[in-house]
Image (cartoon, rainbow, N blue to C red):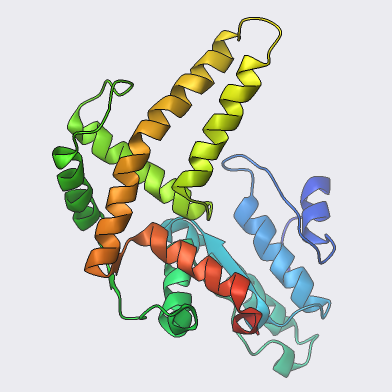
Amino acid sequence: LGQSEPTAEQSEVVAAPLEPGVVVAGAGSGKSETMASRVVWLVANGYVRPEHVLGLTFTRKATAELAERVRKRLDQLRETEQLPGELLDGEPTVSTYNAYAGRIVSDHALREAVEPTSRLLSEGQSWQLASRIVGEYDGPMDHITVGADTVTRRTLELAGQISDHLTGAEQVRGIGRWLRAEAENLPKKPAPATRNLLSAQQRREQLLPLVERYEHAKRGREVMDFGDQMALAARIAQNHPEVGL
């Protein structure tokens, strides 16, 4: 396609087998171009059709950049006329994680007995709801030494992390019990790093009642936030394989 030759590491990524893999690379290392080349290599060698390719990114900017590169390289491949046209007619899907999760929820939420029209909270609406919960909370907070706004932010962050990892508050508490048991079994006094880990877990656990009240409030209002949407999309994909066909 008239592009410069990839490095040995890039070539390994481009021609990797059709199986799960992880590529770690820093900013400006050519990740987008390498992934575009990967798509072209898969299509040109008949492993996939363009419409079978799904690219997901975290930001709209990254989505636009990846989509532009992939489509440009596929257009160049089409111009070579070395493959039957019907094998190159489709277009790949490139989207942010949240946007793609929204599409899955919109099309398939009823499979999980959830109304696809459930209202999605904006970041501002999520903040207002969580802030009200924090302001009304009178439970123990002796390990929390920050102001209400920071508590609200951390509550929303923890709620999002729990959703993103498809877990729950009780699992987080279970991790805390395991950490404390392991620390008690150490032959000598825990190192500073271990003590910091235990302190962070204590602070996290004191935020869990706020997270649970936030989740309860959303259910009562029949709304969801971006974390809920991501978790629901993952649950749909896990429980209903036909969605991916």
